[in-house]
Image (cartoon, rainbow, N blue to C red; front, side):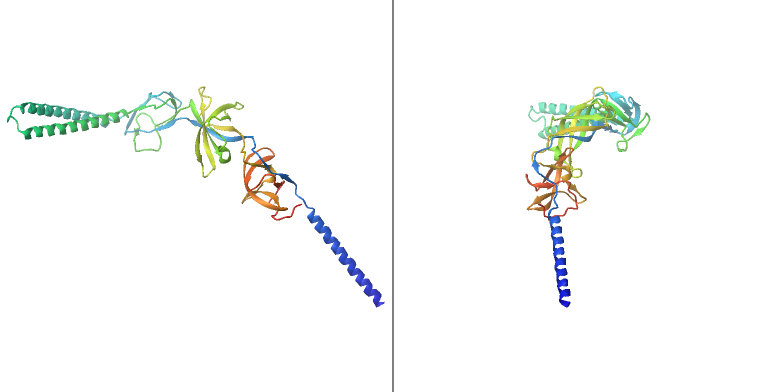
Length: 358
């Protein structure tokens, strides 16, 4: 009876171990059969249309501050006034400047008269010196030095007078270019000072020639060249497509935005556009020929990094990448990857490195 119990016990142990081994094998088989959906990495550039925000600014604009201290005598323009180059915008008055200019003019006239007298005396002494013993050499030398000193003084007084005349010209404020007055902050009788830089007397902007400024991501900026065509829209003219050409590139990448500023000249003869308007700019990007192409859902973006998961030697490897142009389902990536490698589709941050993949 004891032998029978022992045999039954041994058989039970053998059966249990067999079942455990079968379950372990089944688990290992299930684990080995876990597969990721992958695709092959390609090398090419993605052609796409990129939409970026831009802004229209005046081609030229200037804040007009007083050059001299004085009172506002008259203002000939107001907000919205169209002006032309050389047009008188406003007039200041400063009686002390006028008096100073008159005094400088009188000093110049007096010094010029003294110089003329000294020059005539010197020439007479030279003529008299032709008679032996009539004039001493010291007198001739003194007269010559006096004439030269008065000549220098005359030149200095002339320059001083011209400086005062120039200061007087600043009392008439002239438009430096064609444009429109966008701001006015003074009225007749107001005291203005050249030391104050808080608000300009007038703000002048050129509105018939505008600049369209756009910040281009550095991954795209290198693909754009001068004279490339761009199109843009503004909210003020819904549905109206406008075209411009790249006129200038800053050739500098902003360390904060990692972008390069470009400008397009926009002619605004009908004045339908205004400085300060925002625009939606459409750029045609040919793509980067050195880029790798993967599905968009193959790129994982976390708080710390941006990467794709490739299969190398049968195991998962996370490779950091940067991105470029993208379409609805594909994206350009740049990193330590190669053409022909397999990359996991629908990747996520939970997939660990080193997982064996068939």
